[in-house]
Length: 126
Image 1 (cartoon, rainbow, N blue to C red):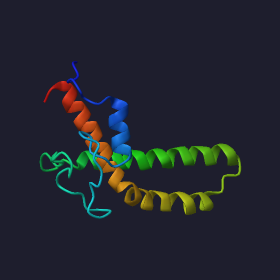
Image 2 (cartoon, rainbow, N blue to C red; image 1 turned 180 degrees about the vertical axis):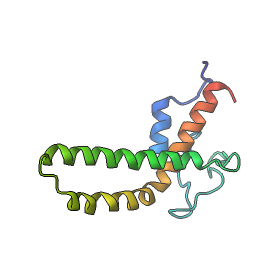
Image 3 (cartoon, one colour; image 1 turned 45 degrees about the vertical axis):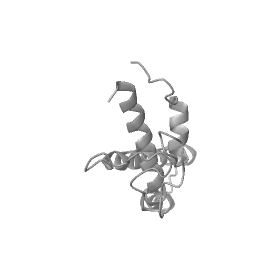
Image 4 (cartoon, one colour; image 1 turned 135 degrees about the vertical axis):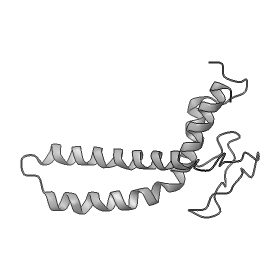
């Protein structure tokens, strides 16, 4: 695989996605509001939604991230409380995490998905 000249590295792309910046130019201010993303990058004009259903990947990123947090928290709680596992307090903490987590992580899931998509497509030459 050849990477185009001047193409940012994976670490740079990941940082841009994690900080809600454009994967191509690094420009910010990609959201009108918390849940409303601009259709194009205000800096370089990159159109974000390339096709209908594009954001399904962001949904997968969101689910995977929140599930990872849930799994790590659940395993840690179990490791520190076995053999007397407090089921009700665990549910009182982890169920709200599973409900609120996807809402909180929503904008980051979109920009991280763009990082994954843009990085992959540029590396294969599409």
